[in-house]
Length: 247
Image (cartoon, rainbow, N blue to C red; front, side, top):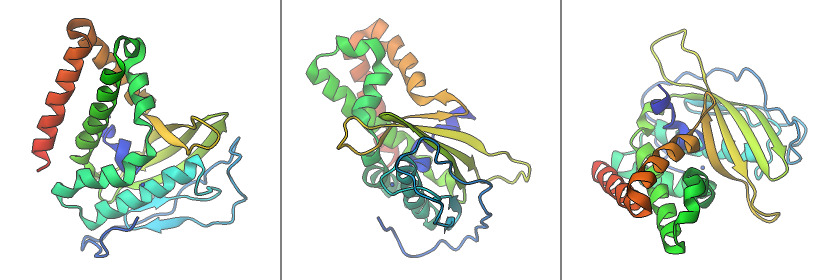
């Protein structure tokens, strides 16, 4: 289940108008259970906005300023899932993620964290190559799963800021024939690298399981056996295979 859930990385932090034709499938929406909390969120404002509904997905945007962490998460989610619900051709899913969601992620920070201590073993050129390949790996990995979230319901439940780091908590209810299906807790960790910078995501945790930690373990195994060069080669091979599947 967690492997499937990690596909939420881009569909949940999804980020812009798309096709105007609404998919013929009827999608039922229900009210969000609780509002976004403004605890420690200096960018939040009093609860003046009601819940905003998008076909097949519910995003509670109460107390979210557009440039705040929860504003980034809610706006991106709304835009990407709106496109998914209207039906995105397989050949265009990677482009959707690349243009709508990817700009809201700090891939440099993500790659550094995923590499851990091995980051220092790479040259500047290798570091740049690793960042580019990791970005492509994530984009093409999760673009193949977007259709699975057509009709998903997402609710923002909490947003906090602590210095230059922030956490946004959501509850994701995936489409299911099981009426007793439970929502999945998805946490987005965001950072602001400088005062003038925008909030960008650097990790996502599905039921407390970190995507960055998962990749760090995998990358470390490869580096230990095949060094940085071997990791780059394996990443490139994987990216090429994923690209072929998306054509």
